[in-house]
Image 1: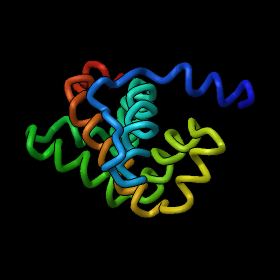
Image 2: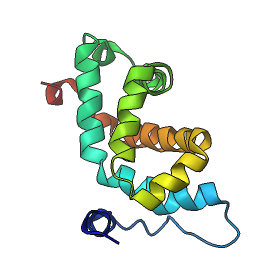
Image 3: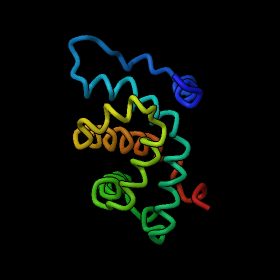
Image 4: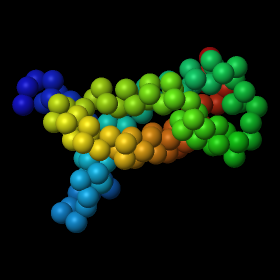
Length: 135
């Protein structure tokens, strides 16, 4: 393993609840071993990127009820392809070459898992998206 790969693996946070066992599918193992730790590592960047997204869309997010804000997050991630691709890049850029090889074998299903994890992470940080933090 080269230095880049070693460092990428070392800096990822441990997620005790992200179990891996032989009964899991390859996609589920990839989700727990790769996607969840990377998404947790990239949390602050993902929140900052979403804050910028809100700003670029005229801060309408801040005028919404909590339910509508959750819908807004969902729609931004699932329907805005440019934004979605940007989020994917934030995660994929942290893959090792071996992980990338695994990813491209089933990228469609793994993208769905990846975006669901990112969406849940942003939703769980919704308080950080409040207006006073957005400036």
